[in-house]
Length: 311
Image 1: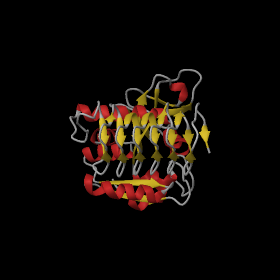
Image 2: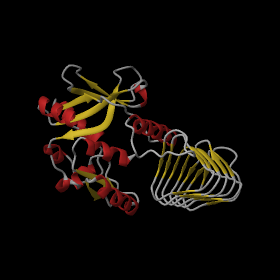
Image 3: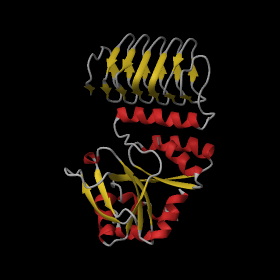
Image 4: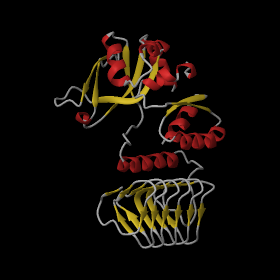
């Protein structure tokens, strides 16, 4: 999903991206190194030694930050200090709502998970800021949404633009799988050469060029297979993500699940119903997982018959 966002920035002319990273930085750095040359865009990382929230990383990356074409024009036109993208949702009570003046886009206030209807526009997480906003942020764990934006809004210097495209929250695994489907759909509409094809492919599928697929497999729809994966013969995959370095052994069946880095799924195993395998998880032969969430570095020797967390 990060790659999708970087590709979108590249498409509108962005030449450098700065990413704030904290958790497992070496994994992220190795991943980005592979794609920097492919995408022909400079990717710089600002590494946190402790989680700094959503505003703190901006202060940390101050020396790396420099001055989506439509949003830039909007930002220049209103003369304020900051612009945020908002999106319309059907259930605003689940989010923080942005109350704004409809004609000018000037943000009046934020209402967190309102019980009464005050609007249906929420923060879409895309910002365009004047450098002066960085002067408002201390180098400490800080929330830009809760601590910085309300102050700018109180000074009538914060404006919002309605996102013209599609937006969704992919914070939960089920939402991630839905997001993957929509992303693959967008590639199909663009007739992207990235999509795999062949008699063993059904619907929209991404397969990294370094992955190896055995004979007699049936893959798709809505599948992403990462670098260095090995899918042995007779495997069935649908609506799932298979991350870097995974091995799926003969005749295994995986659907609606996420298989973490360097994991193994045994022969004739069946993994389904939003099963999530963390990094370096090894599922034995003929094991069944029905919605198991397995933490990293575990070996699964018995079936998981109902959704549960395996620690």
